[in-house]
Image (tube, rainbow, N blue to C red; front, side, top):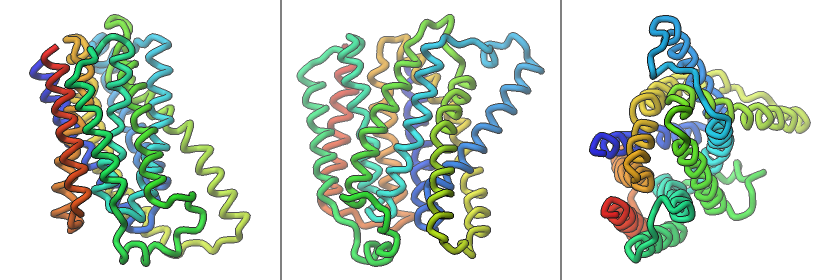
Length: 328
C-alpha cells in the first residue's frame, strides 16, 4: 500500500509537466491540437518500441505480457478518446484564462471517480467523504469566479473567433467534466481480473489508440475548415512545430515513465488493497500543489484571492476524501 501511495504522488507530479506543456503550446500560438498530435505520436512510438524490444528480448516477462480482456481494452480506448478532448478544452481555457485556476478546475474532476467508487460499493459513503466532495466542489466554484488578466484578454482578442460561448470558463468546466469521466474509465480498466488485466504498456497503447481515434477526425476537420476559409499559411508554422517537437519529446518521456512505472502500479496496488478511491485524490493533490508552484515561479502568475481560497478548499476536500478512504 505504501508503494502505491508513493507511485500516486509521483504520478500527480508528472502531470504538472503535461499541464505546463499545454500552457506553453498555447502561449506560443502552437495550439493544443497540434501539441496533442505530436505528443501522442511520440508516446505511441516510444510505447511500441519498448513493447517490441521487451517481447523480443524478454519473452514471457510479466511487464511485456500481451494479455487483455475486452472490457479493459474498451475502457482504456475510451479513456484516451475523452482525454484528448479534455486536454483540448483545458488548452483553450489556458489560452485566455489564468493557468493555475484552469488547472485546479479541470483536475478537480476527480470527484467523478470518487462518486463511481461509492456507486460500485468500492468506496464507503461517509460524512467525511461527503464533506470532502463538498469542499472540492466549493473550490471549483471559487476558482470559477477568477478572471483572466486584462493583458491576456487583449492579447488574445484576435483568437476569440470560433471560440465557443462562455470563454475560458466554459472550456475549463467542459474539461472538468471530461477529465472526471476519463478518470472513471481509467479506474474501471484497473478493476478487471488480475489474470486478464492488461499490463501498463498495453494500457498506454490502448489509450493512444483512443487518442488517435479523436485526433485524426479532428485534424481532418480543422484542415478542411482552414482550406475552406482560404486562410493564409502561417509563416511561423515550421518554427512552431520545431518548438513542439522539443517540449513534446520531454513530456512524452516523462509520461511514459509515469505510465510504465507509477500510474498503473498505483492503481493496481491501491485497487488490490481496496483503496482505489485514494489513488486519484493523491495524484490530484500533488499535481495541484506542484502546478501552483510552477505557475508562481515560471509563469509569474500572481494568484487572486478566489484562486487561493478555491485551491485551499480543493486540497482540504482531497485530504478529507483520502483520509476517509484510508481509514475504511
